[in-house]
Length: 274
Picture (cartoon, rainbow, N blue to C red):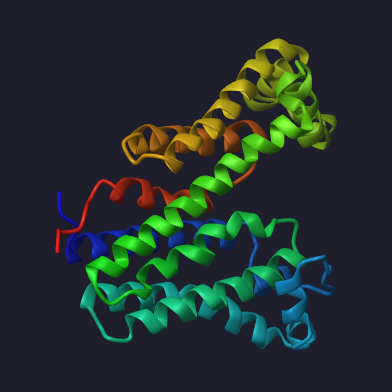
């Protein structure tokens, strides 16, 4: 199947849908600059973040509520403009794609330093817009596969980390993780199905360890994607299941990464032979 301009528009709309849903989720939970109203920033050993800090923009954000609103609005506006330019095939599309990616990096760098949300959660929104930097179908094809490989390596590296840390051989690993993740929630005496479910998994480490192994396997099989695209459908299913169960069991929202699913889905298309 040949890749066409229609597929570029479809991916753009999919990316926007993923972004809007996640933006709405964060807004609902009060996780925007204007909602948090930050009073301090936490610096970290990140070269890009420290370059941003040299601009003194973090202090302007702390002192001006209107600037916090501007940041939230621009963060939402740029994906809409990018998708509009893709659908309408405007010449400004590559520039909007670059601006969207750069502003997303800036926004999430500062946002992750004033909230408990890690910047890794926003990786898709920071680099997926770069797929639309090209002007032709051929450009889109190669950029798509570059971002696809970045995503695959990022996901696979999580499995390598589990191997290095030794958690994948520790039967009590998942039970300990659940205790640390939900300890305060359970101590508060919350009653209901979810608290009973988590308590059951904590008290049955073998069962929770089996779930941990499934998660490890879902990450590890992504190594296949480095060498072939034929398994992308399988990787897509494994990825969606991982995201859903990670939220169910850990309460960690990695639905922000679902925009990467477009890379796995559209990788089946090829470009015409020249």
